[in-house]
Structure formats: C-alpha cells, structure tokens
Image (tube, rainbow, N blue to C red; front, top):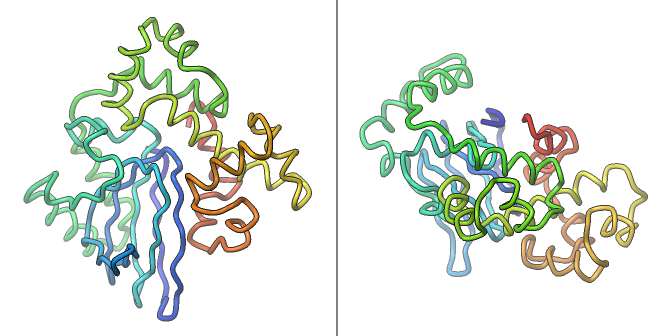
Length: 259
C-alpha cells in the first residue's frame, strides 16, 4: 500500500477534472456524495465503494456537492493480496466493492462511516483481508521499474527475474494488471510531472530528454495517449484533484523502490 487519503469539502460548483494513469490501483469509499464520471454519452454515478484497477487512459471526474471521500492507494502490484483475483481482470474498470467482497463491503462502508478516524479504521480493516502473499519476483521487477523511472527494457527485466519474456508478462499481468512494457511507459510519463517541479517553465525538450524520451515528439505522443492532450495544454488545465496525484512529494515516494 502506498498511502491512505481523505478528501473533504463543499464542491458545489466544481468542474470536471482529468485523472491520468499512474501505475497504481485504488480502493475508493464515498462517505458522502459520490463523484460523477463523465463519459461520451453522459455521466455515470460512482458506487459508494469500489475498486479502480490499472488505468491505461485518462478519465474525467466531477466531485459531488458534499465531499468526504476516502482512498486506499496501492503501489503497482500491491493490491493483489487483498483481491484474490488476477489484477488484469480489473484493468480500466471500476468494480463495486460488493462484487469483490460480497457482504463484507457493506460492513466495511458502515465501519468507516461510523468511525471518528476513518483512515485508521480503513487500515485496520484492510489488514484483516490479506489473502495470499504477493509475488516477490514481480515485486522486485516493479521496484526495478520504479527505481529506473521506467527506463529499461523488458528483456533486461526478464533476465533479472530469471524468466523468459512471456513468463514475465504472464505473471506481471496477474500481479500488476499491466504488461511490464506498459507500466514502464506509465512510470516514465509520471516522471515528467516530477521533473517539471525543477525546470524552467516550457522547457519541454529538456524534460523529454531528462525523462528518457527520444525527443519532444515522443513525449507528446505519450501525453496524447495517456493524458488526452499535449503537455502544455494538460498542465495549464490541471485541477486541484489532478495535482493531488502528481505532486512532487507524492511522486518522490512513488519512485522509491522501497515505497
């Protein structure tokens, strides 16, 4: 687990905000009004509690009028022991917690709603749900990807793990929810936000090279795929909720192999 967080406030006039892939899965509980997810054909109301698998594309969210939302953020591969199912089954999906935990989901929601310290309650309740242990070989592979900021080949990763590329991908999909090459791409993309905190505004060529992109065009392609916009347009429109996930302090912890 990377962290637990609690977002509170009155968001009556909030606009939609874009959330981009970051290599993490998350368990969300709305203790007050749920968020809306904006899709091409309208809006979807999020369940009261649900699991968000790995994302490969951005999504648009709009906060409810009265916000009290708790999140449990898992490092890549960290959610596997709590779900008892391969992580690739949840990729690009938001699955109601009752579909995963059955009747325990309602008890989980109720306990958090009644607790004066919901973050502590969530940590304690989650600890009771640990199932099978994490795949330690895949955890080591994830640590290598994070420590190298996504700048390594699948071949090198497979050799370090003592596996063939196909074996690595099969186990990685189950443990993490993405192929290793795709996680490398997302981690490198997240590195851009970390680098932006220490370079001159608009120095996109330098940012691209520092983050392992072959050139600025390569960086722009990844931003179009993963953020749905060019780098300058995305950064200019980034909202408070989006910045919460791309802050330098949060990314410093994320990139640390030890978490």
